[in-house]
Length: 431
Image (cartoon, rainbow, N blue to C red; front, side):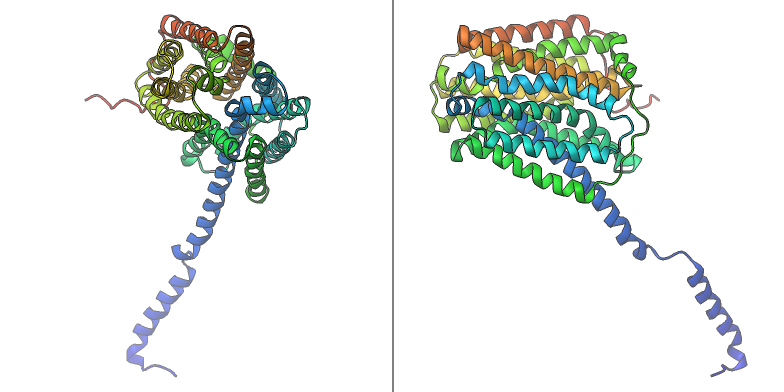
């Protein structure tokens, strides 16, 4: 099989080409499927955290759209039923900072899987609660989950992807929070109207169980870069802008939840709407709130102060308007659309505020912001319960509007140092 001598040079050239090909790195098609599989698994894992966060926030706010139904079913007043919102907020405010310190260098995979498992248990316990005491126990367990999720989920998601994709992973998790904030209540109200409030908790529990299965399957080991110590959590209190943001959050979120906890009774008792109209307006609230999130992001690109001030003034307008426009579906629609748009802006505005205040320590700022939100949620729900039981729904709306106006004054008067957001694109270079 020897070739003629005249072709030796050609044979040598061919053999050299074959040898070079054999010694070269494997061609891209042989590597791409492995890389694609790894990338797909990582993003599915990020997605499981985002959906888990959605399930957690939905569970937190579920009683708001079902308050009167749960109160009647467990034989307590609307004001007492409001404790289902207050109690998780109290525990979550303490749990977030405490868990991040107590966890030390514990693998974040273990932390996330445990928190999701507790979320499943909380929902199932609420779904089968024979009395209000059992319901409160389920809600306290939820408070632990809320504090943990808000603290660990964003950083856990960023550990799953490459540096270039960390912002996208963070956005996915925050999207889960935002969507649940504006859609969780109407979705829960819809399920409750169709098949009962216990089924609403059951459905959320099944969603959390599915998330748990995916996390057990896909989450890799996620050791933290370093352990957070208690003194790290005090750093935001040393920054003037961070202090102003936390103070504004206390009044803004407390004012919102003092009224929002009793949104369904407002629509039923003040506007005289039936179950179908109430569900439709709660869904409209969620839809316009989702739009409000993007409006807030657009304002944030210009100035965090403008975004926060716009959110506060729009929310105050909705709350005060609710006592002035009379009854009926049209009046209720006007209030609900304004209210939903306003609250959709609040999370993105205040997150951007804290990121600008704490560019060198974002995790510490986030931990205290979470505590501030939860303290305000608990305080607002408790205050709303006291006012609604003592003076009625309209008085609760006026009280809430006054609290939000205080927040607007804090942002407008003390927040003058807040400028462009840390999330905003860098300005173009000048020529």
